[in-house]
Image 1: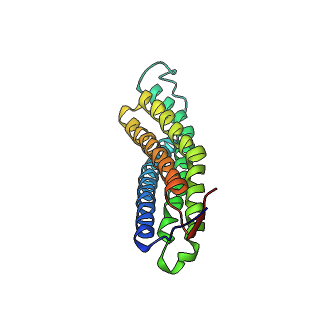
Image 2 (image 1 turned 120 degrees about the vertical axis):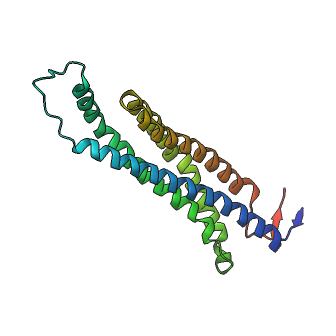
Length: 189
């Protein structure tokens, strides 16, 4: 049984607009995550640049000097966490750009761009987003132990990671189930 179904311009326009909304949200999350991670990199770099030699007067007793040195030792892994988050925020931005490449001039490649967007969303939801979320949580725990105000930075990164996870799953589901391009004739068996 052949059922003829022609994709009209209005339905294609709706699908592309929806994909662009998902892409725009992912670009926004990627930019915010990148800015916050860069702020973390700057903060951690400043903490690493502080010289924390052994102070004979403190003998590493629990005084102010001891806590400043202890924070110095946590700055190195936090710097690595923030650098990874900066790199992974680039993935979110890259993923979000695919729907914006769906111009009328490239209409013959819309199906490929949609599949690329879907695959990037799935890879992001499976690998990059859990890593950013985990690093945000661990960074918040490390920062909360020594500087309670700095924990907000990592907490927001973790929250953005969770939001990106939801958006990536919904966007890939929309690509897979709700937006067919390029087939004017469908055959059902």
